[in-house]
Length: 474
Ligand code: NAD
Image 1: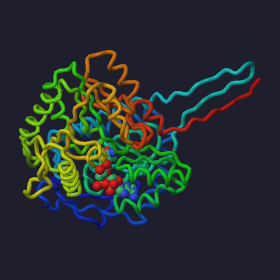
Image 2: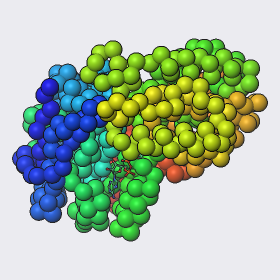
Image 3: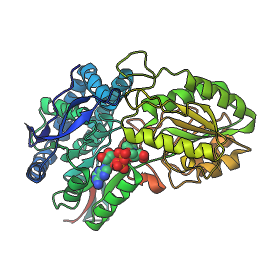
Image 4: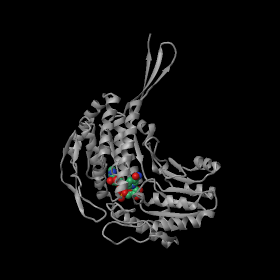
């Protein structure tokens, strides 16, 4: 099966280098090598990004959009080939890989067209005096993207930067490099001027500690864990640089007693199993009003147990392997701790000892508040289902953690919607469905889940600086 040769991309040229093996999580076979950038590669990328920025910021927004839209069209045309590479490196079922790529293309298209509307503001200040507010691209961006969405996560960062007139150095995940490589290849083939987009891999700590404080870099964007995000944000702060931090979550789901518990549980199974739960917006803590609790928990467990687990290349697979052995270890640790503290295992609960990093969708009920799983982002196929007496209790529990990325609620009561919308501490709240983020809406967190937004006009705004020009004339 075709897995591309992974290369660095610096100043419009592909570069080979030695590096580390890439593992297929479904069978633990080696499928390729990820090249590691040297300090000289990074210096070249920094020079290229500075030159590329000068070219790109002076390119008309309409001309920029045409190139970006062409890249999106190439991505759509190549979806099948790209999806195979992503399933091989990351494990997600092929159909989900295709959906990720198409969603990535949609984000790129939306940002490209919105980038043509980078308006300013004129403030008449009396005779002979006028203030003009400009929005200008901030400059070269250093972007760090994770392994759970190998194409759409870097795609969102590249789209935001390029659509705003910035250049970018992307340090994508070493574990899933093909998603980013194929993304970058589409921009190369679409005729993006050299230096505007650069792709590197290597030792993440070494690269970030060099790029983040570097004078050439004007903005940091990172998607990943809270501890690494805090580390990078501190480094950025030390260098007085703005940052976009898309960090972890621990999605609460409030299920009120006025909804159908069976339909809600079935929708929860479908969402929780997506990408084997390795999603920052994954619903994890289900707070179900008592009347619906038993039916909801039973339906959830039955749905989880019925999922077909297997290699993502098999079209009948519904739950693929986890992306790396760290996630399987984390599931074992969290489930064993919850069990010890009295949680009931309704489905799953044991790793699957085949080759590959398989773990079933596990449903735990009556999980005490002090269980590790109730506090630490599982980032895997683990659902925690607990009864609550009323909405006050559900909201208090939803807000109990330091995270605030995505939250969900199921209710048909306008009063409940109003309460939940006002009181749940989260960057994104979704009511009666599970799509937490779209191209046109701002996505991001509060509290430890980070700051800055990706998507929507707010997302593009993060890649710009505001300049006021005050003009006395006449
Ligand atoms: P990790 O904390 O070691 O790494 C998280 C990500 O940060 C990886 O992509 C890694 O390459 C990168 N990274 C690590 N150190 C870095 C550094 N010094 N500079 C720049 N990048 C660095 O954990 P992991 O095992 O890879 O992932 C597990 C945890 O990460 C999960 O529990 C989850 O909370 C979080 N995560 C979140 C997202 C998200 O979408 N928000 C994505 C992936 C992982």
